[in-house]
Structures are given as structure tokens and as C-alpha cells.
Image (cartoon, rainbow, N blue to C red; front, side):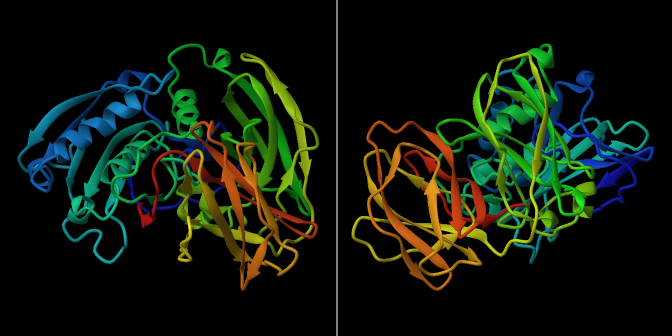
Length: 421
């Protein structure tokens, strides 16, 4: 028996299995199960409705590039086969991925594309997945290439990510910005569809996040390397347990944060939406972990107790002598060698007390903090030899600690914000 899922959310009854990154997860035979394609489903065939092809001169090329991008992720056994442009392509066909025109499906929803999928309710195996595109996708206001790669991530079984710099983040950048997979995207798909022995493709970290009332469900656990890059993430199961797989050899700090904005639980699919949305203080694990590929590191425990008022949700940037600044829930981009003003805003900010830091040694704060209303700002210098990467922004206010994961990227482009689904 198969069921078509678009915005249908199922109830949770038992403990949820967990793995690296966030996967679309539904109840199968009473067990919450990440849904995925069987290996023999590849190469996935896809076809493009001729009405979509007519939306933009480069529409077909952009769609082909989006599929190719996922297929080229190192360590991932993902392949596609194009069937070209088809007149009146039907999304009801279950032997192919159909990219069709949404017509009025997305009217008023603030989204330019949506992915629906069918899975076998007895096994959790994906049977079909299709993408519906609104004409506004190619109208030039935002990055259509990024949006297409995002939707194909859903086709493969990935849910939204709370890493702001991830392709699977629920918002897409402005037209013309670079389209890059974040480390979390790459690890997600390589551990989901590994080319070789998955136990050898990085380290596996296991542990539990516990709060005032026991295990915390859907806490995001993040592994951060020495340059402040969020290398991999995972959400905890209803008991607070997590398994973070595919982490490359190196030294990492781990922390757990709530999904309380800019990505919240209502942005997720399936079982994740039934987690307790109550906030908890972001906490770093007591000691860093040095890991080697192919090894398992267990019993990583984190106790985080009490309520928290601090909740950063937005970040903004000012360049040069400009005084204009806009805050958004999307990452900001900085350029090596420049001096910029960063601002972070949200709930629970206190003038004279709330401060923040960028977990990347290539950024150095060169001014005092300034406060206004619900945000704090400071000037930073970016080293000329700064390497392209994403970084975590940590906000402190008294004893409260909170994070914006992947809120800053070092690269030569800038990103805005448009909703994607």
C-alpha cells in the first residue's frame, strides 16, 4: 500500500530511529521511519513538463544542473537519468520524477515550488516523488538554481535543515548568489545513500540530551570544528538520543540547541512536528571530542536544565560607511579582507548585557558592542586569508546562551531571503 504525502503529518507512538542530518520521517508499521529510495531505484528518471521548460530559456539546463549537483556529492551513491521535456507530463506516474507546473497550487502560500512524495507504508521505501513549480520561480527575484537543488533534496528524502547555510534551509537566497552545498548537506546524502561501507566513511557519535523532564525530543545536536564550521547535525529522538554519523576525522565541539527560530518545528515534516516545541538553553558538551574515521564514540551526555528567554532569530550586515541594515533569518556573506558591522536580533536581548561572537578565528571584533531595541551590533574585520566556509554565531546574555548555526558564510556573494518549501 502506498500513500501520497504533501502536508500530511502522522502521530508518533514509539521511539524514533535517528541518523545524521534531518530526514523525512513517518510512522511505518508503528515505528517512525526515515523514508528513502532503495538502492535499485537509481538512477532515478526525471522528466520536465513542456510548460515548465517554457518558463525560462535556461529552465531545462538549470533543472539538469540541480540533479547533477546531488549526483556529484562525494561518497553519495545518487544517480539520475533525464527523460527530457515531455508534453503534459503527469505527476501521477510512479516510475519517474516529474517536474510540472503548479498552476494555482501555490497561490498565496509564499512558495515557488513544492515537492510531493509517495512511499510504501509497509516498508518506508519511496516509490515516487514529484516537484511542482510556480511560474514565479524563474521571474528573477531569487535564486532559482538554489530552490531547485533544495526541492531535489526533498525528492531524495531530506527534510528541512536548521543550518542557515544549508541548501535544505527553508529559505532561498537572492538571484545571482552562489549555490553551494554545506557540509551538513553533503554528509546527509552520503550517509543516506553511501557508495561504500558507511561505517568507514567518518566517525559516528552517539549520546543523549536531557532537560528538566528527561530526554529532549527534536533538539538539534551540532558538531563544530576548530574553524567554527557546523560540520554535521542531527535531531534527537523522543528519548533525547542521537546518532551523528559520517563526521570526518578531526576535533569537534558539540552543542544542543532548540528549534525555536528562524527554523521551528512547524517547518518540518512528519513525526518531527509532534515534538515538544518548548525552548531549552543551548549548551555545549563539557569537552571537545577528537574522532577518527570508522570509529564509534558513545555515551556523550548533555544535561540542559531550566527555561531560557534568549532566542536570536535574525542577523544583518552593514558594509563600508553605509548606515542601512536589514535583518533576516538567512545567513550573511562576508568577503576576505573587508571590515563589516554585524548585528544579531531576537527575543530576550538586554541592553548592555547581550553580546555575540563568531566561532571563526578569521573574524576579529574591532569595536565595542552597541545596543538598540532588540538587537546588538559590533564591527568585525575579516582576515584577508579567510577560507570559504560557514560559521556559527554564539549569543550570550548573562548566563543564557543561544546560537545561530551557519548564520555567517565567508564567500564572495550575498544572500537574501525568500520563502521556499
